[in-house]
Image 1 (spheres, rainbow, N blue to C red):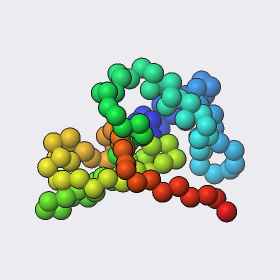
Image 2: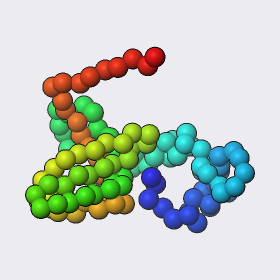
Image 3: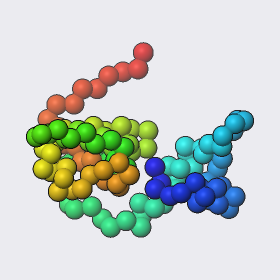
Length: 117
């Protein structure tokens, strides 16, 4: 999610920039501290192009599946997984591959809202 090496994550944990998760076994990182660090880094990013879409999910591309005409692109944005179906030409022009930082801007005329039960 942060686009850094394991060694950088280890140094950030040791330096207090990230919080290690609880438990035994392989070390994990507390999701809240990752979100805070991502928000901190977002301040340093250039402002997005002005748009009427109000739902913007910045994250990292985790999957790209191309066929002859279309491409399925998946972006992980914090706890949210956003999937987009676009032309293969658009995915190629944007050079979308796993690991690339990207943002999904969503503007829909129909949004379904469900309540938790």
